[in-house]
Length: 190
Image (cartoon, rainbow, N blue to C red; front, side, top):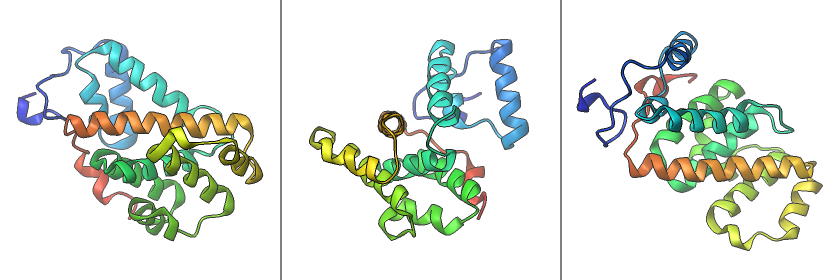
């Protein structure tokens, strides 16, 4: 892979050859998604970092939770919108379009989640993620109580906070390294 083909502005080429388990994971991505997401390629310069990233991502976004997978993707898009993270807006916007079956929802969340036809639960969740992204030190008990009143358990609140925190971190890394979304994301599920 030449420097021009790297998924970020940094010259950190993937380990070659990839360990068998990582190559298998990349092959599964290729088969299921039609691509290997550039975020995985970006972390593949260091297999320990890649494993840490994918472990946390898979736990937060795919494991059992009181939050649906769509709701977690919605948080990813709203946080990424606030942070203006090009990579995550494109990649997770495609996921919202796919999971919801509603391309308009994906675009609304990218631009301004408040214009989307959200139910009370989703609006409370995204209001909390918005506040946590912009001013986490101002969160008080009444903010958590609003989530409880919208139907979230304390475990759900933990998950909302962790998904929000994770995307605040990854948005900053993606922006700082000029991580590029895979071109395939742009046209998906429209």
